[in-house]
Image (cartoon, rainbow, N blue to C red; front, top):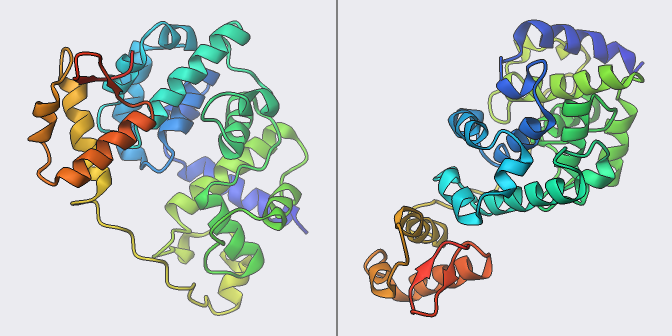
Amino acid sequence: MIARYHQPVLTWYETNARDLPWRRAGVSPWAVLVSEVMLQQTPVARVLPAYHAWLARWPDAPSLAAASPADALRQWDRLGYPRRALRLHAAAAVVTRRHGGRVPDTVEDLRALPGVGRYTAAAVASFAFGQRHAVLDTNVRRVLARLILGAGQPGPTVSAAESTLAESLLPTQPGVAARWSVAVMELGALVCTATAPRCASCPVAGQCAWRSAGAPPASVPRPRQPYRGTDRQCRGALLSVLRAAPGPVAAGDLDIIWVDTAQRERALASLLDDGLAQRLPCGGYALPD
């Protein structure tokens, strides 16, 4: 019964998948890891130029490990969620020190890398090494919720039952299972989208439990917090100044960046707590060494 889903989705993927650099034959496990970190909460269109620039500068883990955290933050630029740059730098150091500069190929060793959680470890093991693991990103979870469970959207977090379901749907052969995982992910990104699914283009629409149930609407999601005026925008503005400065930035130079003193101090304190900035003995601020 499960196998009936496999061939339609795999065949659809062969003719409809986007040509993304981290999916091409011969791409290194390091490049796959970089892509997975960059793609966390960031759309493909924004990641592509950053991905190419990053790998042009640091084509492997040892080259990044030899750079400074400040270099990583500057290269990350405005990709968003800059702690990812620090975690990727820290992961490169561990890969270089413990694994001879090669990204490890087991989920256990991958999860021991800074910033690599359950999803990223499974994705790298599957897409870089062709292993058989359930890869549950938002797109995959939405496809499986609709196709198998008849739900409009998955729950807020991955449940044990959801993981078990995803594992049960994997093809037996590891290489085919890895292909299935990326195919379902692409189906969720291009067809089974969150707000306007293109069911007429779906290769498994006739088997979809959600459609059979009349496509009941999902619960109304919580509205996203606007970016303008938030602590996150303030953090980004302060970090941009530190990133662009050739040396220490005086506290007074940061004061003029954001007029709300309380918010500015709160944002600066959070940058210090997250290791994205450091306070210098001179009283100024800079990116971490």
